[in-house]
Image (cartoon, rainbow, N blue to C red; front, side, top):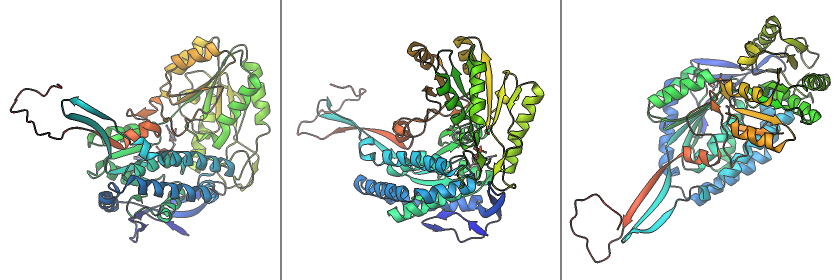
Length: 496
Ligand code: NAD
């Protein structure tokens, strides 16, 4: 049985773990590896190694840091099939989707290759007589990244390329459910020539996370995961003086206006509702249909769903399994609850036809209609292949519904009316908005993040906000003396 362990100081940890976790292949239900869980001591060791590496890395020239970034980019690009295969094996998403994830992660690496430009400060000459002022940005030190299971390659890549390019050392704590992609990434960094100790991996669960939150040697925490844990990370990380960005859960609404292209909207709802088995923080899980289009739209969606195949992600299915049997059962229990609460079950995914092993963690695509806002299938993030249709009478009613929901990660409007779309982008209280685009994940040079209970902290991931998060600003006021002297003056300095 394969054993996955920590990666500290450029090599695999050689200790014996007190606790381990099982890693499954969700398509077969089989345990494929055991992963070591870190104690506070292991985490402390990683922090010390990273702090030591930081001394040199932060003063390594921008030219050399950028060369390492470019080399890393090349390796990830050449080995993306290997990375995608590891994602599919432990997460379950189909191979083409796993490759898409790696490609979106690569975009952030490419963005970080431009770090010399991104770190440029500003300079003002002669703000006062003989005095110049300039700003610089410096790295924080050791940055921790705690990631969720659903994008085991892309989500850590939202953070570490920028953190490392900016001169920080990082400790990644990947999800214990699919730790291998991060181990491959550690190997790629080494091959790219990154000095040992700059990129470290510590595996584990709450024990490792709490050790990160409590360690005084960690300067920042970038977290992505469910909302209760994001809030916990934000509060406890901030309490111990860390800079924290904590991205949480979602319930993404798609508002379809009566003038929309209903075929485009139905395609989008199916792609965004069931891609990656709904285990995406940008999945559409609530479709808000402005009457009179609901009957037609639901029929078009159901027709498309009938053609979807569910099965092993390596065998060309449209949709793979859920990540664990526990999660599959939880999602299925929401379907039961929806039926009990009186929603109309249009397509039932609870006994799907599978192209793969019967022991996999399967649930087929599921569609509910006539969903009310008091039902748990509407209020809660389900994180599975369950799409709910809510019927409303007007744009205003639909907008009010979206703005009242506790989550505000992503949303989309489908319409052919530019004025209505423009009004929506202005009025909706959500961080990422799509106009006739169902999964509006911002490209790497913009920043990713939601509002309300979908993000704790004020800084979104990657883009210029990412550069700001991983650096501290410093302003220097300087005077190089000319032969004349100003003499003594105890007054507050004023620009003259
Ligand atoms: P999760 O919250 O269970 O786990 C996330 C991380 O927290 C993991 O590394 C895990 O080991 C750790 N963790 C789990 N329980 C913990 C605890 N009690 N104390 C401390 N740490 C703990 O999330 P998940 O199930 O891995 O991922 C799915 C969730 O992530 C969904 O809610 C999804 O919406 C969210 N997500 C959000 C975004 C975003 O950008 N907002 C992106 C991807 C995923």
